[in-house]
View 1: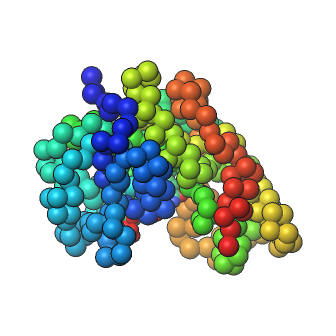
View 2 (view 1 turned 120 degrees about the horizontal axis):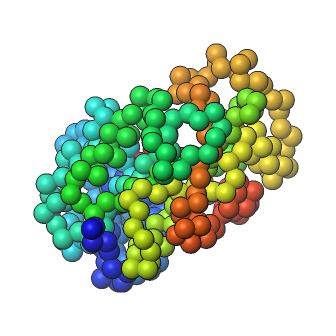
Length: 293
Ligand SMILES: NC(=O)c1ccc[n+]([C@@H]2O[C@H](COP(=O)([O-])OP(=O)(O)OC[C@H]3O[C@@H](n4cnc5c(N)ncnc54)[C@H](OP(=O)(O)O)[C@@H]3O)[C@@H](O)[C@H]2O)c1
């Protein structure tokens, strides 16, 4: 039986590997509860709560970074070699610490293609892309690490500063449509909030090692784009069918259109009782608009 964390207090210290979009949002959220949160970065910056970690250049955190740490969250994607960057460089160090809880941000890409059917944590992963196979390998490494690990599978992440609104503003949008194709997504605030909810209520809730965090309404990409144009008061350009557009897309952009699935959040939202802040892209994009520059 895994010994999960006690509910959070100001005595808790989080180390967040990968202070990118989700990691930084999580750090800010957890600090609001009085906890200490340090985030890693591959390059030096002037944030006093940031420390250097770069697995590829073997730049490791100083020992003092780990003093008093109770919780760890890794937001770093798999390395090119398919290994988890944190475990590759720091597994022994982390295993020597009295850690109460470790979280790992994974992707729903591990489920592969379901031709639009719903997928839940009960479904066997069937990675379709090589990067999803690497991700599944990293999940397995964490599960076998002897650490009190909890894995969060995430669909497309968006939020203030990184949403379809910015894509339109920066002219990085292509209005592509593919019949019957849907995508799931999640607002970054719900990633942070759901994880905090699970840690704080761990004594009341059944423990699940793998949990999807997704919103309630998977839908066609073009619906989201249309709504974003409406919010900005702009006219949406004419749509292009995927079959016509695909030759102009990068291999990675093309690959996203080869998988079609609806990610279920029933475990998180029904069984475990988490209430989404942004249940669909409409409320989520309206939130992004209030912070849009
Ligand atoms: N974006 C999505 O839509 C999406 C969807 C599902 C799952 N995910 C996964 O969820 C996690 C968080 O996503 P995100 O979009 O918030 O991430 P992000 O903004 O891209 O941040 C990734 C972080 O990982 C760090 N990093 C990358 N390679 C590293 C290495 N070799 N050594 C040390 N640090 C390294 C980066 O460092 P720097 O700060 O120095 O760049 C950055 O802080 C990632 O694993 C991502 O793959 C993302």
